[in-house]
Length: 332
Ligand code: ADP
Ligand code: MG
Image 1 (cartoon, helix red, strand yellow):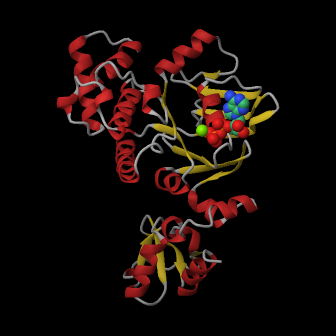
Image 2 (spheres, protein in one colour; image 1 turned 30 degrees about the horizontal axis):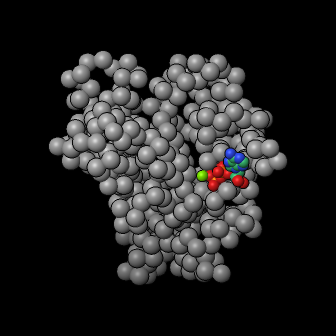
Image 3 (cartoon, rainbow, N blue to C red; image 1 turned 60 degrees about the horizontal axis):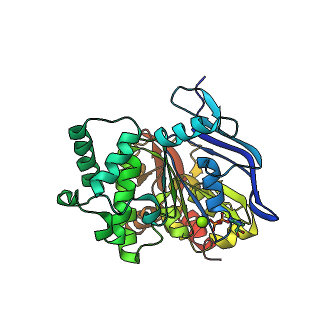
């Protein structure tokens, strides 16, 4: 039977002597999702990602990969050569520092070509074609294909690193603080490009960041780590609306509800069976995933209740007081 997870960490712990790297972590990584792991420095993010990748051996627990053959593999039980084969063909790892993932003394195209050859490509023309295509996708001027990454800026190097990592068409992309070494402007630009690219590719991605805003902007779901433990995992909206620990509540206190809270979390379910064709309803509708900002804008233009629709049906009502309550609770 096909399982819905791609990766599953089940109660994994990793110790460095007396130090806890990560402890009792369980999480599912779903096909196609972007999961952001966020936490302060030393909270165990890199340890967790390296355990998932198989670079670090876990001390307790299991890591399951639902691979292409639809067999579920236990990463902690397979042989070393098999693990390396899976890392090469099914996974890709992007490091914080592009120097750790790129060879600086061979060309940008060569870096991608090397990755492609590792998964069996042999035809030179074909390899160059794919390399050009990926450089274009990460918005590197293709005339620079034969230049060495050592002559590129940090942002361009990270782009080549990304192109190299995804060129072999991995199932899962794992990234350890891929944007944090970059200047703020370049960083924002690369985040935006990554969001665009990942929408096209629909590639399952786990990325680490110590920047909560980055996690909210990029991630479909967020896991918040502290002292080696995942305190909470969920959408930004779920976490902001319902933090499970005091630490998480404080950690997410700065996220504006305007960005993350959607209509479905504010509305009262429609119990009166209102029709979308009622004149007072028709002009005041939003979708289930309308943001709080959109709802406020509509409420300024058209006072009165706002109706939430899904598939041409009214599924909920938002009164002005619901909007105000949501905003006020977020500022406490
Ligand atoms: P993060 O990536 O969130 O900054 P890490 O996973 O690097 O956190 O580290 C988690 C904890 O494990 C920290 O307390 C760190 O000091 C410790 N740690 C990480 N790597 C080692 C190591 N090689 N030897 C000893 N302790 C380590
Ligand atoms: Mg780290």
